[in-house]
Image (cartoon, rainbow, N blue to C red; front, side, top):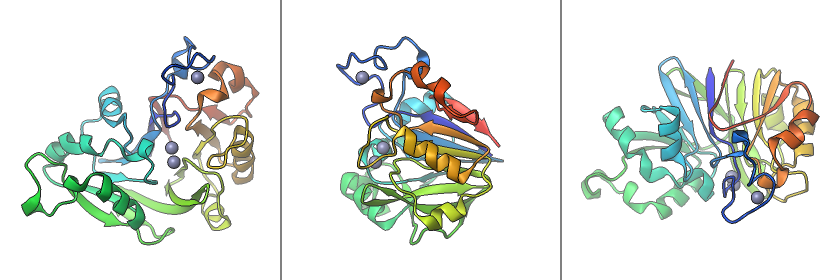
Length: 257
Ligand SMILES: [Zn+2]
Ligand SMILES: [Zn+2]
Ligand SMILES: [Zn+2]
């Protein structure tokens, strides 16, 4: 199993337009962050986890020319705004792109991209083609090619969203609380990718301290912090304070397990 962290930044990306803070003006390339998303890969199968506004650039930069499915954690713009850019993948797939998401998220996508959800006879030529798979309930595994995923519940403020486990790897973004039944699924992990926004509390996202506490509780072999805000400061200012098995994610990072 391999995961590529194609984007690791907050919803505005880093640098934030017009901001002159230490992270936004850092010359360290590790402080340049596109919006958070990832690609899972095993055998002949590749799955995008979220498709934010930087999706096109991320696919070009990572040299990813073929995808077998999209799995969406939730409907916020920084996780779905790239849907129109799946069109080249319809060519490489020679057909509709399977999309897996909760029914509420599919409704939000349909409201935002109505032309992509028309029946084939009403779709205009060149519109994105999707094959929609609603995920009715968390903790029910599903298989796409060589990858079996188990979605699990994550709370993003009051919004129930999804994380995904595949083999010994789990991917969590935009979490502020992880329910006990999800924690029970996340034992014996080799790799945990988990969001950590900044040092000070936020109603919708873990702080660095909250993310580290969860890492300690779940005890994965390695953990990687993603969805970072410029308010965290430059990587260089906090990376050395982290436990030995916790790493700061950076754009383009590939992790195998
Ligand atoms: Zn800034
Ligand atoms: Zn969100
Ligand atoms: Zn987000």
